[in-house]
Length: 253
Image (cartoon, rainbow, N blue to C red; front, top):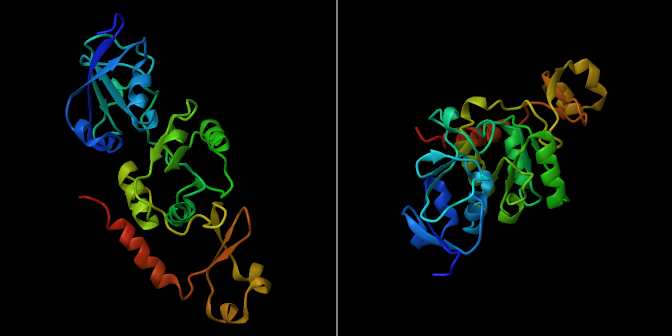
């Protein structure tokens, strides 16, 4: 053993194991370090983004990310808790990861549109750079949604989630389950194009903008307060309802 080598004993719980090699999943394992390090340094060196972590126990005591690890420390690392109130134990951040405003990276455009369809505030542009996403998340207190682990390692990002699936519909179900958002779903309240809020508008105010058949057959309309896009329950409504039901049925009871 090197003069300054420390041996740590770690165990990661639940979905945090997704980031670990098979031999280290759901079991305690040893990890050696040769320098002074914070528990955050250790966790991220093992491939787990700090934004996925809700609770860290070192030798049974809750600690924050800056805690300096010591030889023979036993470290337990937990993800977001949804059904258990652990607020008295929290040390890694001031409050649980329960803010439902998102910013999605440039590879998650379809996910962003689906989340908006469900009524969630989700910023997205296909030309977002990582630094810009990090600044938005930090300045607006948003949860970063990404498939880029390196993005989640940026220190100013405190709330984030690594999306496992590469299929948009599965991604939606994943996010709904991860943040337990089912009770907050509010379809048709947000513009899927720009993320702005939708409000009801009298037909007479927008009649000149409607196609003749739309003007003839529909009476209820909504408009985006940001971009002015007009919405109504047209022939696509049945498909939309089936899609929404598919998302809601993904809840694990």
